[in-house]
Image 1 (cartoon, rainbow, N blue to C red):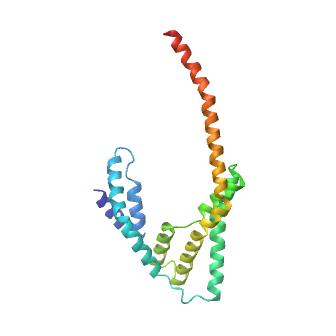
Image 2: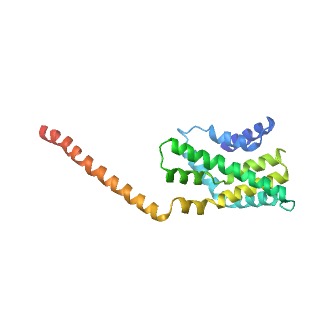
Image 3: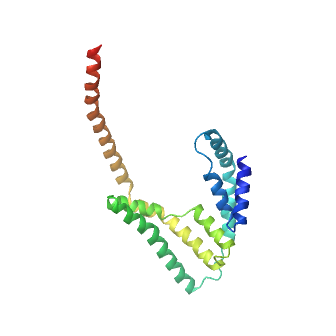
Length: 200
């Protein structure tokens, strides 16, 4: 039943002039969350069993469409501009949003670094744009390189912004705060038990 919904939704999105991936996403989004727990768990388990085969194939196909043989000085300039806009948009937006929400500079930087990474969704959208003619081969190749560069820079930037010693220190502080909160609530719980025991 769900497979039929998936196919019909994908076909309708193609008929409307959209990519079938949007219809497939919509088919999963409209499935009710209540009363279908077993169905959703079964579907997720079945698809996860074949995802490990499909993901490498998809990345291979996406890589075969990249052509860097025509990259020249102007293309490197466009790549630099693309990287600047991409990093400023995701890292800068996440950092400013976190600071506006009251987060510390370190936490905001860490969040910005994590948000700056790209992944499968980026490659899917780029593939859709290439198939729809919205991107040419050169721009597609530069955008894929941008996705790879911003993803590869995440790990070293994260180690710089939030080193392991700082992570361990924050975990110790969090554990100490948790223990203090537990000790603070224990007397109140004992006080609530006493009137009920006195009634007995």
